[in-house]
Length: 136
Ligand code: HEC
Image 1: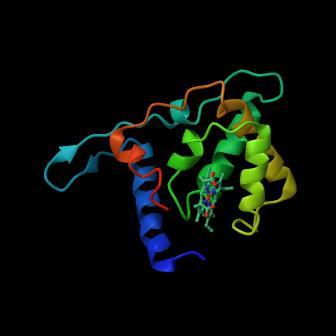
Image 2: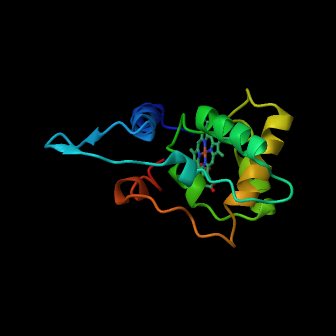
């Protein structure tokens, strides 16, 4: 079961991260601490046969709009699943995003398997974001 109070606060964290994604400075309360996150670099689009720029763009939007409600995007880009691994993730998540259609899920799986898999190092993230990895 999901702890609702926790997921609410994580929702705020995710919102804050997306403001950071828009290159807004994150403040630590004691002084401005600029965090320039290049979301195109994080949500990269490695050239491949099956996954073109258009699919990357669509999948990125789907992920950012649907997959950051309960947790930040961090665990998604740090995973290095192969295609089967991403299938398993979406199976485990089946009840979590009921608004997604099968074709949308297929597109996200293709994008993720092509760009976040065992043969590619995860993107560099600042420590503050790495610390969120297991904060769900
Ligand atoms: C309704 C809440 C919710 C939504 C929406 C959600 N997740 Fe999750 N996610 C969780 C929880 C809770 C965990 C912690 C591990 C678990 O219980 O599966 C998690 C863990 C993860 C993990 C790391 C752990 C693992 O199982 O590999 C990944 C990767 C992930 N989610 C990807 C996604 C993607 C991709 C989407 C969008 C399709 C998504 N999540 C949407 C709740 C959610």
